[in-house]
Image (cartoon, rainbow, N blue to C red; front, side, top):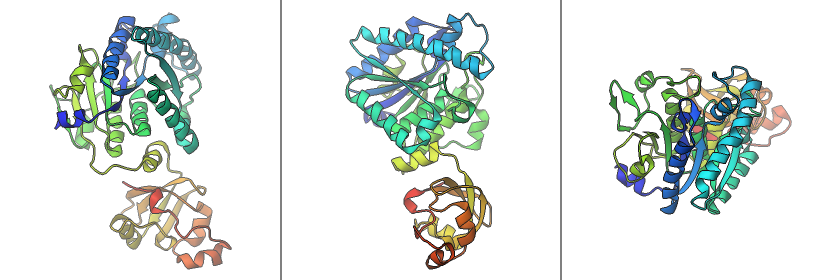
Length: 367
C-alpha cells in the first residue's frame, strides 16, 4: 500500500524541525547541507518540493548568545528577525552548489484566513515551483501576534500542504515515528482519542514549540484534506530517499477517501467560527443525508454575534453536538428575526431577501 501511494507523489511539502537542524542547540550548517542534498535528489527525480523550515528563533538565539528561549513576544520577534536571515543564508548557500535558487515565504494565520490573500499566497508558491525555485516557508514571527500565530510549524506545514493541494506531507523531527509503548506504529488510518493520549510533548522545550501532539494535529488536517502524512526521523541517513522509495520507515497516516474541495479546506482549516446555529431534526436530515443547503425554516436558535460571510458552527438542536461549519449569508441579527420561517417569508420580515439559503451547501462542511 505504501509503495503504491508514494509512487504517485509528484509534489510534496517537507517540514524540517529545529531538532533536525541543530547540534547542541545551535543550527548546524552541515545538517542544513544534508537536508538540502536530499531535497535536491528529489528535485532531480522531477518531484516538486515546498520546504517548511523551523530554526529562525534558534538561529537568532545562537547569534545573540542566548541560552534560553525568550518568553515575551517582542524578544521572540527580534530573535526571529535576526535568525531568519541567517537561516535563509544557510539554505541559499547549500542549494547554490546544485545551481538551485531558494525563495523566502513568510506567512501569518491572517494571510490564510482572508480568501484573496490565501489565493495570492498559493499562486506565488505555485509560480516559484513552476520556475524550479524552492519555496522555504516559515511563520512570520517578526510581526505575528498571539491572535494570528499558527502555534507551531507542524500545523503550518499541514496548512501549506492543504493550500497547495499536495500529494504528501513529510514531517521530519528527531523521532522515528509515532510510538505506542516502545514500538513505532507503521500505519494509522484514524486519529482516535486513545492515540492522542499516547502523544507526548517535545524533548527540548528551550528550542522547540512542537511535539508529537502537534504532529497529530497536523496529521488530522491532512487526513481531512485527503493528503497522506508521514512522520520520520530527519537525523537518519537518506531519510527522504527511503521514504520516497516506499520503504516501511516512520509512520504513515492514511487520509480519508473523500477529499474536501479546495474552498472547503480553506474554510475548515483557516477560519474560526464566529457563532452557532442550532437546527431541528428535519434540517439535520436534509444536510447530512440529502446534501441540502441550510434554510431558515430549520433553525431553532442562534448564539453569538456574527456578520454575513462569517463562518459559523452548525449544531444539532437536540444533542447540542456540532455537525458542521459553514459561511452564513445572513448576520446573527437577521437570523434571530427569520429563524423558523419559510424562505418565502424572509422578505416580508426583513424587507429584503438576497439569498434563499442561510448557508449554501457549497459553503458547508460536514464534520
